[in-house]
Length: 113
Ligand code: 5GP
Ligand code: ZN
Image (cartoon, rainbow, N blue to C red; front, side):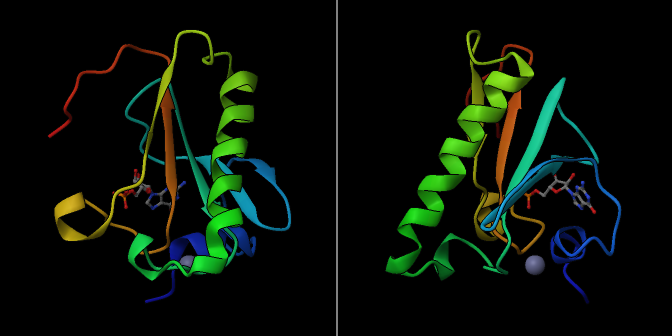
């Protein structure tokens, strides 16, 4: 089955893209769980955190700085937000292309599940 996030990154599938550069693409989640729900995704197909290489440390850091910028842009930086990277079956990962959720716009409960 083709990867849905690779299709979005390659513009073969529609998505509301908020940001893109050489390394990452950010777009609205198709099933938002809060007023702001954005996915920040490496352009390279990395299955999960388990598949990261040591050389990916800069890329992973970049996911955070893009998240910071988008939180500011969406106006949720002051009130706060949640960043989530689900990994594997127990982590609740459903799309096996590494992604960071940026979720905010309402107060979150903890833990989730
Ligand atoms: P996971 O459970 O793997 O951490 O999160 C996958 C997320 O991707 C879910 O929140 C789901 O709503 C979102 N998603 C799945 N397929 C698509 C898609 O084709 N387009 C967009 N924009 N979001 C998707
Ligand atoms: Zn992919």
